[in-house]
Length: 120
Image (cartoon, rainbow, N blue to C red; front, side, top):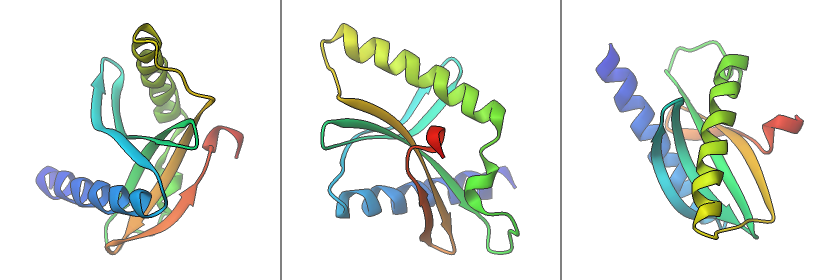
């Protein structure tokens, strides 16, 4: 079960990386680990740092992928983003804006892309 979940997650992330590249995003990193959790994809577009949480759903899942991002998950993501920004700023890397997107993947394709979920 865990292996299937990990495999589905990795396939979903690969699909999203390709999706983002086709839309002009530069992928800066994937699977960044911090003490609070992991950032799936860190990208850049038009001077903005875009952190992407990928939600991959199984074939028979009844829930929309983006609804799987709970308030606790958002808190962990915010903490990871704060640590990432601290690291980047210490390297004198700055961005105009920072946003958190959630991209849902189901049945091998992107089914939703919520940009800047914090303001959604």
